[in-house]
Length: 429
Image (cartoon, rainbow, N blue to C red):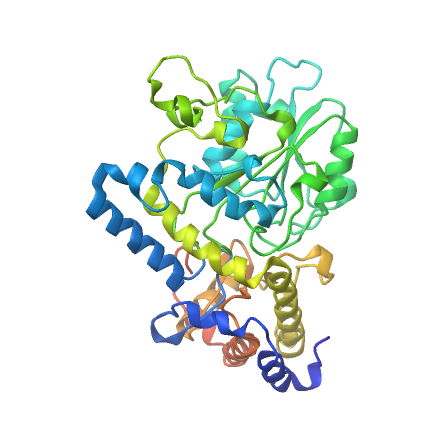
């Protein structure tokens, strides 16, 4: 069902009335003051299920102390593997190909250390992109330096033709015979562009290039089929669309064809569970992705993720994606109708198969507009130099929320109130 721009308020009412996921909003805490939250692609809201799981972990710590590692329910010792089993269906993988551990950047470091071969003189280069999240580039550059290589020579970045989007042709053209590994974003974090993972992966495999995907802005918003697509590895965070809380434990995927490789960064939790307490100085790595764990899992950070994932299981990834696309399509129609006259443009692709979970609006005064929106009770996200990101999350954002947010933004632009905003930080303008 396409939006009818001639009567968008009524369209919002009808869509909310018929929304099969509308009841999930009651599971989440709203912000103080009732602000409309459109920043779930930075940090998801707290659900009652995540809160309950965190409180349960605290209670178990209080009652059991160290015995919680074996006596808690679920036992802390195997909690990463148990939660990984919940995450695996979201990415289309087997349970032992996924592990919940570390953070996005730490997991990228681990995957580079495990899979990249610096001695391959014929294929020494790593391919990334000019729009990559900075932390990914920092990790790749530091890894190359640690291996005695020069990032200026050995890191290749796919260019962006317009500063917002990547093209499949440019990505494939950069996959030259001297590239050993590609690390690309499933969804470009600024523009919200969803890349064709399956096609790019197939071509990388055909050319003998290891390929991994940063899925931080896609997991929980876009269904994935890692096994079917035959990707080599992936990594992501859980605090955006999966609502696991600030700084939540990250996750990674390792294709089973790489099982048996020694972890590049080894630690105690790299061990096979049945051998971990042998306390020998000879590592017996766990089978599968679990062998890429390093240190002791962060139980108080894992717990909210477990609670949050139950909501995703009940909602179903297909229904979540359907509503996400409907929300961003509706939001697009509203922005075009209400804001085009004020110089607001949308750089996120319009086609469903090219759009992640958020829209990127471009305006020369984006930073001040973002501050004005916050003052008006709408929480967006700003990315330099000129992008306002709006992320309606299907579990807790309504179509009426989207319409009201656009209406408030129109009033801000009509009245030039954004010009009154003082300078602020680039993180939260």
